Length: 431
Image (cartoon, rainbow, N blue to C red):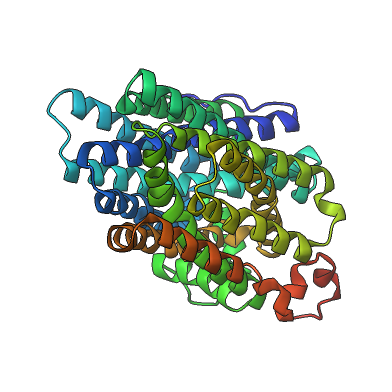
């Protein structure tokens, strides 16, 4: 099939990438809302919901480990297109099987696992494309990261809103048809709008890798190890990974078990869960937009601490206190506003420090690292709620979350968050 002509205007390629990224994440947001509610409705078991959360999160770890190297090898653009097509097909199978041969719980778990496994390399590839297309368009990395995060938040907000409507009017599984369609549309946009030269050919990629990889380090495992080593040898990046591992553990517990369980106590259909996700995402969209506007002017360490502190604990404590739903939605909006700065700030730090030849595998290794807490959080929350009840678990999660987010105040390598640290670092220093 002949390749399309790339857009002549550099900005158009970046816009197309962001549009494709947003479409695929919109579908993912629908899945995040629909699958836990479907499992909870079909089984009536919080523990089964936690198990489904494990099968949704473990592939993020595996996909990050395997996908980053694959993306670097076959090219960012190609990997993004192939991953979107494969993920769309996998999600399509869920409602098709449910309507025809039936959808046993183990089959649902397998399809959820496979979808996550395929989706993670696609997200890595799209993220890896951002600095190159931003540079071509004449936009700073910090601003492009903010826009990228704003698109992600918008997709989550719209997807959650659509999911809430679908749960009530169409039934949960029908929403997955929309998910499959968004992946197909994303793949088409990327094929039409992102220039072919965004893929570094194998020879170019290997030449670039020779400059940063140790002599003799070849092979898939060695390439992945290079991404891990890059993170492990830099204290700032290592500390970021460790902090996000813990907070992601709580976030996974919240999104896959605690919030759906809370929503089911408010309404029989649990549709308020979609509203909760949408309100949080709207706040996060606003926060990402503010970061895009002001992010380069503010000190990063205070922004990171305040953002994590407000984004993490308050929603869990508010649910534990059984505040009225409108009050909880206000707390979620504030938490989302704070959370909107976190991803673009961390992504900017990564883009500033990771060479292009290692970009996808470092992003993949970081995805693997920060995702280690996801299955533990989902399964642990299911077990804990079954054993101790919802409110005690919400209180513990809120309290520990607040303590963890204060880590950057300890100093040390956290001071290197500021961009000035790159210019001030002596040759060979690894921050």
